[in-house]
Amino acid sequence: MQWALETVRDGAGCPMALARGNHDQRRCYEEIARPYLTGQFGAEDDPYTVDLGAARIVVLDSHRCDAARIGIVAERFGDWPGWRILVAHSPAFNVGRPFFRDRPFDTLLLRHARELRLHVLFCGHTHNSAVVSYDTGGWPLLQVNLSSVRWGDDPPVALATAKTWLVPAARQLWAWPGRLENSWPVYALADVDEDRLELELRGVGRGAELAITVHRDGRVVPRSLPPLLPPAAFGLAQIRCGWLCLSLYERPDQPHAVWLGDVLLGEFPTTLPYYHHRTPLSNEALAALRYANVMHLAGPDETMAVGSLAIEVELDDGTRRWTNPSAGIYVVGDAYADWPEPAVVRAATVAGLPGIRLGFG
Image (cartoon, rainbow, N blue to C red; front, side, top):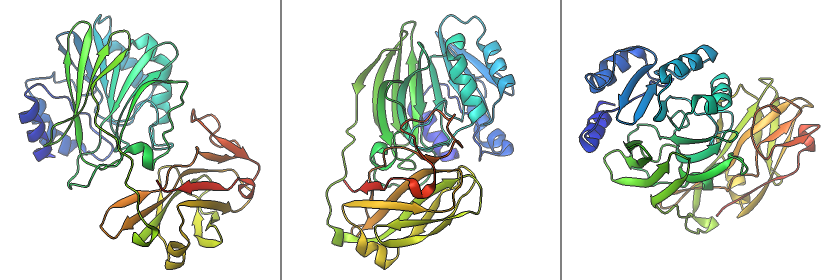
C-alpha cells in the first residue's frame, strides 16, 4: 500500500483522496494512508471534506453506509454550487459482480442522487475498473470503479468478456467496460474547472489507461480509449486445466448438482451472497469442453438465485480464457426480485431453468 501511495503521489503531483475499504483496518488506514493526506484535507473523521477549486469532495472512510450517513453526505455538500464528487468504497450500482454491493447505501444513494446533485462517484469493492454514466431518473451519475491495489503483472482482460455486464441498457448513458478484477491496480486523476472535469484512469506505475471529458450536463466525451480486444482464438487441445466459477445464493447448505452436458461437475451448496465457488474441473469435464457448452442445474424445489456462472481455463502458454457470460442472473422464486438487476429469468423450480449456454470467444 505504501508503495502504491508513493507511486501515485509522485506520478500525480496533486492532493489525494483515499476511502477506507472493507479489508482496510482503521489502524492501517491511519498509519499508512493518512500521512499521504495530511496537510491536504481536513481532519474530520468520517466523512472528511475538501474544496479544491470548483470541486467539493466528500470522502467516506468505510464501506458500510446507511440513511444517517447519506444525510451527513448531504450536509457536507450543503449548498455547494460547483462539482460534487463522492469518494466511497461501495458502488452505487453493479458492474460485473452480481449482488456485490451494500444494498441500503446504494438504494438510498441512487434515490437521492438528483437531490444531492451528485456528479461523480469514485468507488472500489468490486476489484475491477469500469466507467459508467448512469441515469438515476433524469440525473446522470458518473460511477468510476477503480481496481484493487495488488502485486503482479497479469495481462489485462476486458471485463465484459468474462463477466455479465449487469448495467441495464435503459440506464446506461455512456460506458467504458474496463478491466477484469485484479488485472492491475488503477487510480483516477481529475482536473476540474467550472464547466468540465478532465478524467484519466492510470495504472499504478504505468501510463494513462483512459481519458475522458465530463461536462456539467452529464455528457461524456472520450479523449483516449484503450482497446478492449477480445481474446485470441485457441484450440481446445491447448487447455491444460480449468475451473467452474459459480455462486448460488439463499438457504445455505442445500446441495445443487451442476452439469456440463452429460458430465456432473459436482454438487454445490447454496451460500450467503458474496461467496463464490471456484472448483477445479476433472479430466472428464475438461475432455467434454467445447467452444459452446450447455450447463444445467438440478436441486431442491426452493427459492434460490444463480449469480456468477462461468468456466475459466488456463492454456499451455499460461494465459486464461473465460466463457462469455450468460444472459443474466437466473432467479428461482422471488428471493432477489427487488434487486434492480437486468435480464432476470424466473422459473418455478431450479430444474425448470433453461439450459444455460456458455461459450468461448
